[in-house]
Image (cartoon, rainbow, N blue to C red):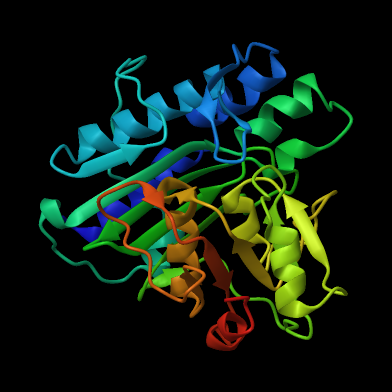
Length: 314
């Protein structure tokens, strides 16, 4: 596999293609929601008892992303949060690589297909996606929604793409990184660890609030947010022109189980910037095999990650 081509296929799958048309993913995530046609149902319960929701937006985004990647690289293992074999349109990639990627991604690398795993989250923060329309229409919960694609080689995240379909700023609504090659995002100029502003899940919080306060003190600012992709973006420098800008955090902590399609793209992005995403015990997460990460996570960039880990409750 030529990595630069593989990389652009991932950016193509996660974001709008071209300036003339609305992309299929964008249309079916954003327009399905705005059209009040979510056909929401539950896939089951999380360990905390919350519904795992599935909407038409999830399925249509999955079909586009999964079919495009699978048809372009048929020998590669592709794992998506959703499972649906419907092909609503022929999925093909033009093989045109945009100039911004050519400028930053200079080299290529051949790897065998069996070493590669692609993780897809067709719609991260589904609860916020539906609640913003049905339950809490006055809250801008769709700011948490992302679509994500990640390429792992031998279990290590190498390419990450996070797209914000509802971002209200112009320009960069797609954040991407290729470890060892380049990225279109960067760390912020400064971070605090005394105490660190900590971002956690608003829907899978579990005991994370007391966990964070035990680690960093009762005065720690805790930001509750939806979507693992959004939480990673809160750790890096994002455009300031948004009407409601991305929250700024110093560390992202999750203390319960989490799926690898939720975190692989963010892990690649942080790794490319010199950051880290590990389990609560500081172990690297293997992005191959089973989809479930049982060790929780700590994510950071621009700070001493090991020092953060040492402050966590044992």
